[in-house]
Length: 239
Image (cartoon, rainbow, N blue to C red; front, side):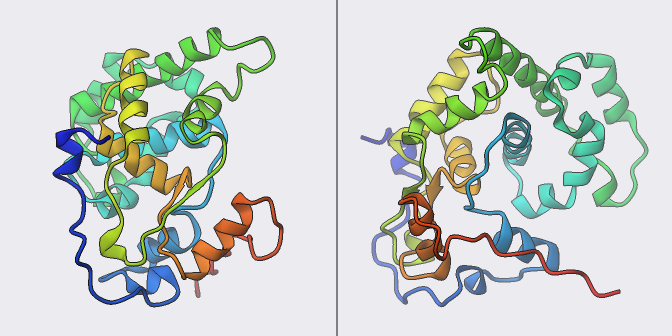
């Protein structure tokens, strides 16, 4: 079962109206970038160590902040951390973090969140992934993080039974187990709520409510069907 901390974060059962379709149409105050992210990225299965390491790092950076804030700064994080190349990030030093903290303030999109602990955790976690790879069976080193994270859901997305956005949980026993295992492996900024957010955004759990086009498409994907399981394409910006 859930820990008491996770139970306190769960939604109330009495949720009113059913979800409109599609899923992202119900989200309030969406700017174009956030809407594109929710439409084309959030909840769709993500694989590959680099992609998952980036998401792990950004979810950790979000702690205490909004995802909109971090999404705005995503390109700045990619620039600061070498495109989240795990081996290059693992070689970074405290002096590199000091430079990021001392960089001139500009537009919000041009800088990372100035939190020394969070920035150092990205380097620490890259080194933890390297250790994970070193312990992986020969030939499976590249993909060790992918296999580790997806192992908590048996290797394929778990579908929600929630019918409204308000009924979507914020934690789960699997997220608590993931958090515990990541901490044991030396990772930082990987609490249960952060892990569940990672699971949602990377499609380990499908929390698009039942009845939405996204839930139907991802249910087909999870069952191995090809029909209806295509990720929405990003719209080209008008110039």
